[in-house]
Length: 542
Image 1 (tube, helix red, strand yellow):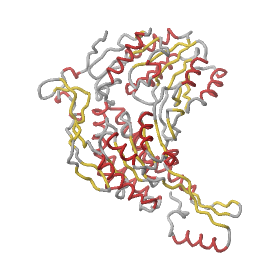
Image 2 (tube, rainbow, N blue to C red):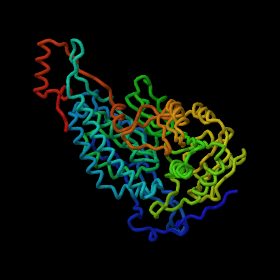
Image 3 (cartoon, rainbow, N blue to C red):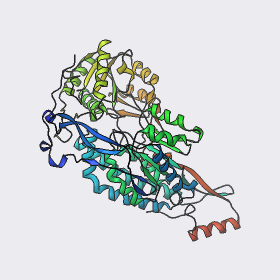
């Protein structure tokens, strides 16, 4: 039986009750960016709603209308693709042949303009995807930092390339060069940060891009279109709005996309790959699902473990690919862990994004509460129980986190990446039980290992490092710091996204080679002294 969760002030919320700084402003945005021009869309528009419920004109509580954006079809999508192709021009375009220093200057200008829109974008993050004020501010600031970190990383990369190497009788000047046209599709849970972790390294390496924002978190991109237009040459960045099947699929069918850059679900990645007629030529940069486990050993510090598992499983309502989505706890401490963890979950504050100390907030997907309820009901029907008192209580836009125990492989919750506020707990006797589960899983991003005895931890790290790509010792799984590798095995990722690794993912090593003889050496010296080539250069960017 479903219990109704008492909503925060949303039961009687009207605009006047919202702090003025956080009140939504109805935004109708009917432009898109193609070939350096902000074009007007005169076709169908898609309304953008927040699941945060406010009192409408009829005095009824309903999802809040935030604005509208173009609902575009294949024609402008193909127009954007042609624009990106022209800008790259098979490697002959202004952008791919530009000096590194000049591309970095464009990116610096963009970052400066982006900072002017901080307040507006933070507010839209709260309303569009229900992210807390603190987390929304953090996402914006982290994204700006990511841009500057990318600039610095590219400088270091270029500094190492500002030389000739000699092997045997051959001189070589080795640099990284672009791949071509990138189709960039970002996720709704980090619609600014994760999207830019794809887009920024892609374009700074000399590629051109067609970018479509996520369905949720779409309005927050609109303040930046003019900055993209002003800071980059025409066709380098093309921005469209609409559904993936109407925009991404027609683009992929042409075979003219060189790189598919997507953060989302593996089924979407597979479907788009299948549309491409030349899969052997398609570079993939993918951040996909995960079912990151926590493994709690008998000697774990339970207070720290509970604190980290709360953060790991329920920050931003569990809507993170790096979230802890299953907890394996040794049978000797399972009762104590469940008690402490359940109490901690029930102490979490549910509120509106701008409310002080709000940890749990409305879910951005209208169908997500029902989905979470279905997972809970399925688990209960197959023998699990809700361990915390508030677990499963519902509003129109939220399901309070449910701690489910005991969970087994007969339940949907065991297999699915729930991506929401429900936490499965599994008791184990033999450490091989969670290890075997990790090995059998379709995912392999991260694990959190809680314990103290290095004689046990050491061998486990050796195994886990071969099952996932990051082992977090006595701490929650996470993306950052952004300079560290971020990738995964199996269905969790293709390529590596971090500040430095992303530059490599969106480029290829190419070089100029010359036999060591007086004739060639004189030409190389003349090339370097004349600055006639942007590729053959010993410029050292400080």
